[in-house]
Image (cartoon, rainbow, N blue to C red; front, side, top):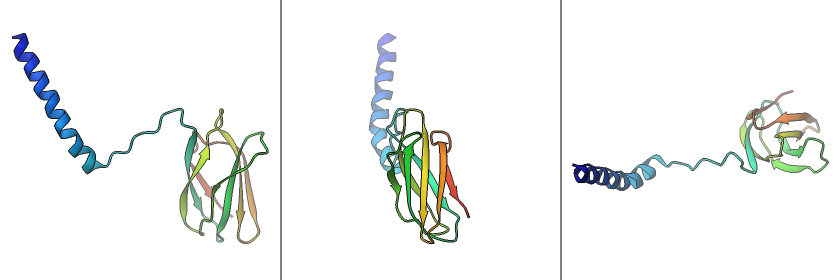
Amino acid sequence: MTRTILKLALAAGLAGLAAQPALAQSAKIKPKAPADASTVTVMVTNSRKTDLVQLQAAQSGSAIWKKVLGGLKAGKQAEAVLPRPFNCRVNLHGAFADGQSMDASDVDVCTQKTLNLTD
């Protein structure tokens, strides 16, 4: 009886292994980033009537800015990959083609995954 159960379990396991590559190829499964990843992705929407020239980020309280997104046409959206500070809080600075700029302080990028740039 135990041998029969063991054979069935082994056969089911092998069948699962054989089917797994086909599933992975057809579904194109992406590996999930670990919870302690060093970056975080935020979807940026440019709802302004002018193009974004660039978006920069700095850890709150820091003066070290990093470019996280280049040009973004008016009405378009793109993902910005930001460094994940130890407390998830960043300051953002955006520069626009019309000479205007925007600043957002102390944004929690670990919980707020979208940024809507408006006039």
